[in-house]
Length: 463
Image: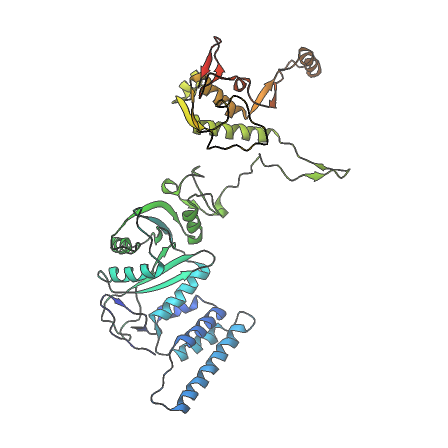
Protein backbone atom coordinates (compact mmCIF):
# COMPACT_ATOMS: atom_id res chain seq x y z
CA UNK A 1 0.00 0.00 0.00
CA UNK A 2 1.24 3.53 -0.72
CA UNK A 3 2.57 5.40 2.26
CA UNK A 4 2.57 9.03 3.24
CA UNK A 5 4.53 11.24 0.88
CA UNK A 6 5.34 14.88 0.42
CA UNK A 7 2.64 16.55 -1.60
CA UNK A 8 2.27 20.10 -2.77
CA UNK A 9 2.00 22.64 0.04
CA UNK A 10 -1.58 23.38 1.02
CA UNK A 11 -3.27 20.20 -0.22
CA UNK A 12 -2.61 16.48 -0.26
CA UNK A 13 -2.76 14.08 -3.18
CA UNK A 14 -5.12 11.13 -3.06
CA UNK A 15 -2.55 8.64 -1.70
CA UNK A 16 -0.58 10.83 0.72
CA UNK A 17 -2.15 9.63 3.97
CA UNK A 18 -3.75 6.34 4.92
CA UNK A 19 -6.49 6.30 7.52
CA UNK A 20 -6.47 3.40 9.98
CA UNK A 21 -9.54 1.25 10.57
CA UNK A 22 -11.01 3.59 13.18
CA UNK A 23 -14.57 3.96 14.41
CA UNK A 24 -15.19 6.60 11.76
CA UNK A 25 -14.10 4.26 8.98
CA UNK A 26 -16.25 1.46 10.35
CA UNK A 27 -19.30 3.74 10.40
CA UNK A 28 -18.62 4.66 6.80
CA UNK A 29 -18.43 1.00 5.78
CA UNK A 30 -21.62 0.24 7.73
CA UNK A 31 -23.59 2.53 5.40
CA UNK A 32 -23.18 0.08 2.51
CA UNK A 33 -24.74 -3.29 1.89
CA UNK A 34 -22.95 -6.47 0.81
CA UNK A 35 -23.20 -5.90 -2.94
CA UNK A 36 -22.05 -2.29 -2.71
CA UNK A 37 -18.98 -3.17 -0.61
CA UNK A 38 -18.03 -6.06 -2.90
CA UNK A 39 -18.27 -3.80 -5.97
CA UNK A 40 -16.04 -1.19 -4.33
CA UNK A 41 -13.52 -3.86 -3.32
CA UNK A 42 -13.33 -5.14 -6.91
CA UNK A 43 -12.63 -1.60 -8.09
CA UNK A 44 -9.86 -1.20 -5.52
CA UNK A 45 -8.24 -4.49 -6.57
CA UNK A 46 -7.94 -3.22 -10.12
CA UNK A 47 -6.69 0.21 -9.07
CA UNK A 48 -4.19 -0.82 -6.37
CA UNK A 49 -0.70 -1.38 -7.83
CA UNK A 50 0.90 -4.76 -7.16
CA UNK A 51 4.69 -4.53 -7.44
CA UNK A 52 7.45 -7.03 -6.70
CA UNK A 53 11.12 -6.49 -5.92
CA UNK A 54 13.44 -7.58 -8.72
CA UNK A 55 12.59 -9.51 -11.83
CA UNK A 56 11.42 -12.71 -10.17
CA UNK A 57 8.86 -14.13 -12.58
CA UNK A 58 7.67 -16.72 -10.07
CA UNK A 59 6.92 -14.09 -7.43
CA UNK A 60 5.01 -12.00 -9.96
CA UNK A 61 2.88 -14.98 -10.95
CA UNK A 62 2.21 -15.75 -7.29
CA UNK A 63 0.98 -12.19 -6.69
CA UNK A 64 -1.26 -12.35 -9.75
CA UNK A 65 -2.69 -15.71 -8.67
CA UNK A 66 -3.49 -14.33 -5.22
CA UNK A 67 -5.10 -11.29 -6.82
CA UNK A 68 -7.31 -13.51 -9.00
CA UNK A 69 -8.40 -15.50 -5.95
CA UNK A 70 -9.40 -12.35 -4.08
CA UNK A 71 -11.28 -11.12 -7.16
CA UNK A 72 -13.21 -14.39 -7.41
CA UNK A 73 -14.08 -14.14 -3.70
CA UNK A 74 -15.53 -10.64 -4.02
CA UNK A 75 -17.41 -11.56 -7.20
CA UNK A 76 -18.97 -14.52 -5.40
CA UNK A 77 -19.97 -12.34 -2.44
CA UNK A 78 -21.42 -9.73 -4.77
CA UNK A 79 -23.50 -12.19 -6.83
CA UNK A 80 -24.90 -14.21 -3.93
CA UNK A 81 -28.65 -14.08 -3.40
CA UNK A 82 -30.12 -12.64 -0.25
CA UNK A 83 -29.09 -9.75 1.94
CA UNK A 84 -26.84 -11.51 4.48
CA UNK A 85 -23.08 -11.79 4.28
CA UNK A 86 -21.99 -8.17 4.73
CA UNK A 87 -19.77 -9.10 7.67
CA UNK A 88 -17.83 -11.51 5.43
CA UNK A 89 -17.08 -8.70 2.99
CA UNK A 90 -15.97 -6.40 5.82
CA UNK A 91 -13.59 -9.04 7.21
CA UNK A 92 -12.15 -9.66 3.74
CA UNK A 93 -11.61 -5.93 3.19
CA UNK A 94 -9.91 -5.53 6.57
CA UNK A 95 -7.58 -8.38 5.66
CA UNK A 96 -6.71 -7.05 2.20
CA UNK A 97 -6.29 -3.46 3.38
CA UNK A 98 -5.01 -4.08 6.89
CA UNK A 99 -2.95 -0.86 6.88
CA UNK A 100 -6.05 1.24 6.39
CA UNK A 101 -7.73 3.08 3.56
CA UNK A 102 -6.38 6.03 1.66
CA UNK A 103 -8.21 9.31 1.33
CA UNK A 104 -9.25 8.34 -2.17
CA UNK A 105 -10.80 5.06 -1.01
CA UNK A 106 -12.65 6.76 1.83
CA UNK A 107 -13.96 9.37 -0.60
CA UNK A 108 -15.11 6.65 -3.00
CA UNK A 109 -17.09 4.96 -0.24
CA UNK A 110 -18.64 8.25 0.78
CA UNK A 111 -19.42 9.29 -2.78
CA UNK A 112 -21.06 5.97 -3.62
CA UNK A 113 -23.38 6.36 -0.63
CA UNK A 114 -24.07 9.96 -1.61
CA UNK A 115 -25.02 8.98 -5.15
CA UNK A 116 -27.21 6.06 -4.07
CA UNK A 117 -29.13 7.57 -1.15
CA UNK A 118 -28.16 11.21 -0.95
CA UNK A 119 -27.51 12.95 2.33
CA UNK A 120 -29.72 14.32 5.06
CA UNK A 121 -28.22 17.80 5.00
CA UNK A 122 -29.89 20.86 3.57
CA UNK A 123 -28.54 22.70 0.53
CA UNK A 124 -28.50 26.38 -0.38
CA UNK A 125 -28.27 27.58 -3.97
CA UNK A 126 -25.72 30.16 -5.14
CA UNK A 127 -25.34 31.83 -8.51
CA UNK A 128 -22.14 33.23 -9.97
CA UNK A 129 -22.56 36.67 -11.51
CA UNK A 130 -20.57 35.95 -14.66
CA UNK A 131 -19.80 38.73 -17.15
CA UNK A 132 -21.14 38.34 -20.67
CA UNK A 133 -17.72 37.45 -22.09
CA UNK A 134 -16.78 34.89 -19.42
CA UNK A 135 -17.03 31.15 -20.04
CA UNK A 136 -17.84 28.61 -17.34
CA UNK A 137 -14.88 26.35 -16.62
CA UNK A 138 -15.03 22.58 -16.95
CA UNK A 139 -15.15 20.20 -13.99
CA UNK A 140 -11.43 19.44 -14.17
CA UNK A 141 -10.56 23.14 -14.35
CA UNK A 142 -12.76 23.93 -11.35
CA UNK A 143 -11.16 21.07 -9.41
CA UNK A 144 -7.61 22.25 -10.11
CA UNK A 145 -8.34 25.94 -9.51
CA UNK A 146 -10.22 25.31 -6.27
CA UNK A 147 -7.46 23.05 -4.95
CA UNK A 148 -4.80 25.68 -5.59
CA UNK A 149 -6.90 28.56 -4.24
CA UNK A 150 -8.22 26.89 -1.08
CA UNK A 151 -4.81 25.40 -0.30
CA UNK A 152 -3.59 28.85 0.67
CA UNK A 153 -6.14 28.96 3.51
CA UNK A 154 -6.37 25.44 4.90
CA UNK A 155 -4.70 22.04 4.35
CA UNK A 156 -7.22 19.69 2.83
CA UNK A 157 -7.88 16.72 0.63
CA UNK A 158 -10.19 17.17 -2.37
CA UNK A 159 -11.98 14.46 -4.31
CA UNK A 160 -13.75 15.09 -7.62
CA UNK A 161 -16.67 13.02 -8.86
CA UNK A 162 -18.89 13.64 -11.88
CA UNK A 163 -22.36 12.10 -11.76
CA UNK A 164 -24.20 11.52 -15.03
CA UNK A 165 -27.32 9.69 -13.87
CA UNK A 166 -30.01 10.58 -13.14
CA UNK A 167 -28.88 14.18 -13.60
CA UNK A 168 -25.45 15.64 -14.45
CA UNK A 169 -23.66 17.00 -11.41
CA UNK A 170 -20.09 17.71 -10.37
CA UNK A 171 -19.36 16.92 -6.71
CA UNK A 172 -16.30 18.25 -4.88
CA UNK A 173 -15.74 16.40 -1.62
CA UNK A 174 -13.65 18.60 0.65
CA UNK A 175 -11.90 16.93 3.60
CA UNK A 176 -10.19 19.34 6.00
CA UNK A 177 -7.07 18.29 7.88
CA UNK A 178 -6.30 19.55 11.40
CA UNK A 179 -2.57 19.75 10.68
CA UNK A 180 -0.40 19.28 7.58
CA UNK A 181 2.08 17.11 9.53
CA UNK A 182 -0.27 14.27 10.45
CA UNK A 183 0.80 10.66 10.37
CA UNK A 184 -1.39 7.67 9.74
CA UNK A 185 -0.75 6.26 13.24
CA UNK A 186 -1.56 9.38 15.23
CA UNK A 187 -4.93 10.22 13.75
CA UNK A 188 -8.06 8.13 14.01
CA UNK A 189 -10.79 10.68 13.23
CA UNK A 190 -11.14 13.75 11.05
CA UNK A 191 -13.74 16.50 10.67
CA UNK A 192 -16.76 15.52 8.57
CA UNK A 193 -16.34 16.16 4.86
CA UNK A 194 -17.95 19.07 3.03
CA UNK A 195 -19.73 18.48 -0.26
CA UNK A 196 -19.77 21.23 -2.89
CA UNK A 197 -22.17 20.59 -5.78
CA UNK A 198 -21.81 22.32 -9.14
CA UNK A 199 -24.11 22.06 -12.15
CA UNK A 200 -21.87 21.53 -15.21
CA UNK A 201 -21.72 24.41 -17.70
CA UNK A 202 -23.93 26.60 -15.49
CA UNK A 203 -23.14 29.32 -12.93
CA UNK A 204 -25.11 27.51 -10.20
CA UNK A 205 -23.73 25.91 -7.04
CA UNK A 206 -25.27 24.04 -4.12
CA UNK A 207 -23.50 24.45 -0.78
CA UNK A 208 -24.44 22.97 2.60
CA UNK A 209 -26.70 25.27 4.59
CA UNK A 210 -24.92 24.28 7.81
CA UNK A 211 -21.53 25.38 6.50
CA UNK A 212 -19.36 26.72 9.36
CA UNK A 213 -19.22 30.49 9.43
CA UNK A 214 -15.42 30.40 9.58
CA UNK A 215 -15.17 28.39 6.35
CA UNK A 216 -17.98 29.99 4.34
CA UNK A 217 -16.05 33.09 3.14
CA UNK A 218 -12.96 31.00 2.37
CA UNK A 219 -14.89 28.48 0.29
CA UNK A 220 -16.83 31.20 -1.53
CA UNK A 221 -13.61 33.05 -2.28
CA UNK A 222 -11.99 29.90 -3.66
CA UNK A 223 -15.04 29.11 -5.78
CA UNK A 224 -15.27 32.67 -7.12
CA UNK A 225 -11.84 32.29 -8.71
CA UNK A 226 -12.49 28.75 -9.98
CA UNK A 227 -15.73 28.99 -11.99
CA UNK A 228 -14.32 30.84 -14.99
CA UNK A 229 -11.50 29.96 -17.33
CA UNK A 230 -9.95 33.41 -16.83
CA UNK A 231 -8.06 34.54 -13.77
CA UNK A 232 -10.69 37.08 -12.73
CA UNK A 233 -12.99 36.31 -9.81
CA UNK A 234 -16.77 36.57 -9.87
CA UNK A 235 -19.40 37.40 -7.26
CA UNK A 236 -21.46 34.57 -5.77
CA UNK A 237 -25.04 35.57 -4.92
CA UNK A 238 -27.08 33.52 -2.48
CA UNK A 239 -30.49 32.55 -3.84
CA UNK A 240 -33.62 32.06 -1.78
CA UNK A 241 -33.72 28.38 -2.69
CA UNK A 242 -33.13 25.63 -0.14
CA UNK A 243 -33.98 21.96 0.19
CA UNK A 244 -32.69 18.52 1.14
CA UNK A 245 -33.09 16.83 -2.24
CA UNK A 246 -30.25 17.98 -4.47
CA UNK A 247 -31.82 16.27 -7.49
CA UNK A 248 -34.94 18.41 -7.18
CA UNK A 249 -32.91 21.55 -6.58
CA UNK A 250 -30.87 20.79 -9.66
CA UNK A 251 -34.04 20.58 -11.76
CA UNK A 252 -35.28 23.88 -10.34
CA UNK A 253 -32.03 25.66 -11.16
CA UNK A 254 -31.88 24.29 -14.69
CA UNK A 255 -35.49 25.04 -15.57
CA UNK A 256 -35.49 28.36 -13.67
CA UNK A 257 -39.00 27.72 -12.39
CA UNK A 258 -40.31 26.11 -9.26
CA UNK A 259 -43.17 24.10 -10.73
CA UNK A 260 -40.87 21.45 -12.19
CA UNK A 261 -40.75 17.77 -11.37
CA UNK A 262 -41.92 16.85 -7.90
CA UNK A 263 -41.33 20.22 -6.23
CA UNK A 264 -43.15 23.52 -5.92
CA UNK A 265 -42.82 26.77 -4.00
CA UNK A 266 -45.09 27.63 -1.11
CA UNK A 267 -46.98 30.88 -0.42
CA UNK A 268 -48.60 30.95 -3.84
CA UNK A 269 -45.44 31.68 -5.79
CA UNK A 270 -45.80 29.02 -8.47
CA UNK A 271 -44.43 30.05 -11.85
CA UNK A 272 -42.17 32.84 -10.64
CA UNK A 273 -38.44 32.97 -11.05
CA UNK A 274 -36.35 31.18 -8.47
CA UNK A 275 -34.31 34.24 -7.55
CA UNK A 276 -36.95 35.77 -5.27
CA UNK A 277 -39.09 32.77 -4.47
CA UNK A 278 -39.82 30.86 -1.32
CA UNK A 279 -38.53 27.60 0.06
CA UNK A 280 -39.32 24.25 -1.51
CA UNK A 281 -41.48 21.52 -0.05
CA UNK A 282 -41.53 17.89 -1.19
CA UNK A 283 -44.40 16.38 -3.08
CA UNK A 284 -45.46 14.22 -0.13
CA UNK A 285 -46.33 17.35 1.92
CA UNK A 286 -47.89 19.47 -0.76
CA UNK A 287 -51.62 20.01 -1.18
CA UNK A 288 -52.93 18.47 -4.38
CA UNK A 289 -55.50 20.74 -6.03
CA UNK A 290 -57.71 19.27 -8.73
CA UNK A 291 -57.98 21.39 -11.86
CA UNK A 292 -61.71 21.77 -12.65
CA UNK A 293 -60.96 22.90 -16.21
CA UNK A 294 -59.48 19.53 -17.15
CA UNK A 295 -62.12 17.18 -18.47
CA UNK A 296 -61.95 13.39 -18.12
CA UNK A 297 -61.39 11.32 -21.26
CA UNK A 298 -64.45 10.56 -23.40
CA UNK A 299 -66.47 7.47 -22.56
CA UNK A 300 -68.52 5.13 -24.77
CA UNK A 301 -72.29 5.21 -24.35
CA UNK A 302 -74.68 2.31 -24.91
CA UNK A 303 -74.59 2.79 -28.69
CA UNK A 304 -70.81 2.67 -28.76
CA UNK A 305 -70.44 6.35 -29.69
CA UNK A 306 -67.93 8.38 -27.66
CA UNK A 307 -69.66 10.92 -25.46
CA UNK A 308 -67.63 13.96 -24.50
CA UNK A 309 -68.05 15.18 -20.91
CA UNK A 310 -69.31 18.72 -20.52
CA UNK A 311 -67.64 21.23 -18.23
CA UNK A 312 -69.51 22.12 -15.08
CA UNK A 313 -69.86 25.27 -13.06
CA UNK A 314 -66.44 24.77 -11.50
CA UNK A 315 -64.78 24.83 -14.92
CA UNK A 316 -66.54 28.09 -15.84
CA UNK A 317 -65.45 29.74 -12.61
CA UNK A 318 -61.88 28.56 -13.12
CA UNK A 319 -61.78 29.95 -16.67
CA UNK A 320 -63.15 33.30 -15.51
CA UNK A 321 -60.58 33.44 -12.72
CA UNK A 322 -57.73 32.71 -15.14
CA UNK A 323 -58.97 35.33 -17.60
CA UNK A 324 -59.10 37.92 -14.82
CA UNK A 325 -55.56 37.02 -13.77
CA UNK A 326 -54.42 37.45 -17.37
CA UNK A 327 -56.16 40.81 -17.62
CA UNK A 328 -54.61 42.04 -14.37
CA UNK A 329 -51.14 40.95 -15.47
CA UNK A 330 -51.43 42.70 -18.86
CA UNK A 331 -53.58 45.78 -18.19
CA UNK A 332 -52.87 46.17 -14.48
CA UNK A 333 -55.19 46.33 -11.48
CA UNK A 334 -56.68 49.26 -9.62
CA UNK A 335 -54.72 50.88 -6.80
CA UNK A 336 -57.28 49.98 -4.15
CA UNK A 337 -60.55 48.17 -3.67
CA UNK A 338 -62.41 51.48 -3.41
CA UNK A 339 -60.95 52.70 -6.70
CA UNK A 340 -61.66 49.36 -8.31
CA UNK A 341 -65.28 49.48 -7.15
CA UNK A 342 -65.62 53.07 -8.38
CA UNK A 343 -64.26 52.31 -11.84
CA UNK A 344 -66.00 48.96 -12.07
CA UNK A 345 -62.79 47.30 -13.22
CA UNK A 346 -63.43 48.51 -16.79
CA UNK A 347 -60.63 51.01 -17.40
CA UNK A 348 -57.11 49.67 -17.76
CA UNK A 349 -54.04 51.45 -16.51
CA UNK A 350 -52.24 51.39 -19.87
CA UNK A 351 -52.26 54.66 -21.79
CA UNK A 352 -51.60 53.07 -25.17
CA UNK A 353 -50.31 49.94 -26.85
CA UNK A 354 -47.73 50.17 -29.66
CA UNK A 355 -46.67 47.31 -31.91
CA UNK A 356 -45.57 46.75 -35.50
CA UNK A 357 -47.67 44.89 -38.04
CA UNK A 358 -47.00 43.86 -41.63
CA UNK A 359 -50.11 43.31 -43.77
CA UNK A 360 -51.01 43.78 -47.44
CA UNK A 361 -53.86 46.03 -46.32
CA UNK A 362 -54.06 49.06 -46.54
CA UNK A 363 -50.86 49.47 -48.58
CA UNK A 364 -52.35 47.67 -51.60
CA UNK A 365 -55.45 48.81 -53.47
CA UNK A 366 -56.86 45.29 -53.60
CA UNK A 367 -56.29 41.99 -51.85
CA UNK A 368 -54.10 39.42 -53.61
CA UNK A 369 -55.42 36.04 -54.52
CA UNK A 370 -55.74 33.56 -51.62
CA UNK A 371 -53.13 31.19 -53.09
CA UNK A 372 -50.52 33.92 -53.57
CA UNK A 373 -47.77 33.73 -50.92
CA UNK A 374 -47.35 36.72 -48.66
CA UNK A 375 -43.92 38.35 -48.86
CA UNK A 376 -43.07 40.43 -45.81
CA UNK A 377 -40.18 42.12 -47.67
CA UNK A 378 -42.55 43.82 -50.10
CA UNK A 379 -44.86 44.87 -47.26
CA UNK A 380 -42.80 46.73 -44.65
CA UNK A 381 -44.33 46.81 -41.17
CA UNK A 382 -46.01 49.94 -39.89
CA UNK A 383 -46.73 51.14 -36.40
CA UNK A 384 -50.05 50.23 -34.80
CA UNK A 385 -51.09 52.33 -31.82
CA UNK A 386 -54.12 51.53 -29.68
CA UNK A 387 -54.95 54.71 -27.81
CA UNK A 388 -57.89 55.88 -25.76
CA UNK A 389 -59.81 54.45 -22.85
CA UNK A 390 -62.68 53.27 -25.07
CA UNK A 391 -60.37 51.10 -27.18
CA UNK A 392 -58.33 49.73 -24.30
CA UNK A 393 -61.39 48.98 -22.23
CA UNK A 394 -62.74 47.08 -25.20
CA UNK A 395 -59.56 45.03 -25.37
CA UNK A 396 -59.86 44.37 -21.67
CA UNK A 397 -63.45 43.24 -22.09
CA UNK A 398 -62.34 41.02 -24.95
CA UNK A 399 -59.85 39.20 -22.73
CA UNK A 400 -62.29 38.97 -19.83
CA UNK A 401 -65.07 37.68 -22.05
CA UNK A 402 -62.84 35.05 -23.58
CA UNK A 403 -63.83 35.88 -27.19
CA UNK A 404 -67.52 35.41 -26.40
CA UNK A 405 -70.43 37.74 -26.92
CA UNK A 406 -73.80 37.91 -25.21
CA UNK A 407 -76.52 36.64 -27.52
CA UNK A 408 -79.75 38.65 -27.23
CA UNK A 409 -82.90 36.63 -26.65
CA UNK A 410 -86.12 37.09 -28.54
CA UNK A 411 -89.22 38.36 -26.74
CA UNK A 412 -91.13 35.13 -27.31
CA UNK A 413 -88.24 33.08 -26.00
CA UNK A 414 -88.09 35.24 -22.88
CA UNK A 415 -91.79 34.69 -22.25
CA UNK A 416 -91.42 30.95 -22.69
CA UNK A 417 -88.51 30.88 -20.27
CA UNK A 418 -90.50 32.82 -17.70
CA UNK A 419 -93.50 30.55 -18.03
CA UNK A 420 -91.35 27.46 -17.81
CA UNK A 421 -89.50 28.63 -14.71
CA UNK A 422 -92.51 30.01 -12.90
CA UNK A 423 -90.45 31.37 -10.02
CA UNK A 424 -89.74 34.82 -11.44
CA UNK A 425 -85.96 34.35 -11.42
CA UNK A 426 -84.02 36.19 -14.09
CA UNK A 427 -82.30 33.97 -16.63
CA UNK A 428 -78.72 34.82 -17.55
CA UNK A 429 -78.09 35.72 -21.17
CA UNK A 430 -76.36 33.06 -23.18
CA UNK A 431 -72.80 33.62 -24.37
CA UNK A 432 -71.85 32.48 -27.84
CA UNK A 433 -68.36 32.27 -29.35
CA UNK A 434 -67.48 35.26 -31.48
CA UNK A 435 -65.71 38.59 -31.59
CA UNK A 436 -67.19 41.73 -30.04
CA UNK A 437 -69.07 43.99 -32.42
CA UNK A 438 -66.76 46.93 -31.81
CA UNK A 439 -63.84 44.94 -33.19
CA UNK A 440 -65.49 44.88 -36.60
CA UNK A 441 -65.65 48.67 -36.77
CA UNK A 442 -62.23 49.01 -38.40
CA UNK A 443 -61.90 51.48 -41.24
CA UNK A 444 -59.05 52.85 -43.31
CA UNK A 445 -58.16 56.52 -43.13
CA UNK A 446 -55.28 56.53 -45.57
CA UNK A 447 -51.91 54.85 -45.80
CA UNK A 448 -50.66 53.41 -42.52
CA UNK A 449 -53.67 54.70 -40.58
CA UNK A 450 -56.66 52.80 -39.24
CA UNK A 451 -59.61 53.65 -37.03
CA UNK A 452 -61.04 51.30 -34.44
CA UNK A 453 -63.90 51.61 -31.97
CA UNK A 454 -66.82 53.99 -31.83
CA UNK A 455 -67.48 56.39 -28.97
CA UNK A 456 -70.88 57.03 -27.46
CA UNK A 457 -71.15 60.34 -29.31
CA UNK A 458 -70.71 58.58 -32.65
CA UNK A 459 -67.08 59.55 -33.28
CA UNK A 460 -64.53 56.90 -34.12
CA UNK A 461 -61.37 56.31 -32.12
CA UNK A 462 -58.19 56.34 -34.18
CA UNK A 463 -55.16 54.09 -34.25
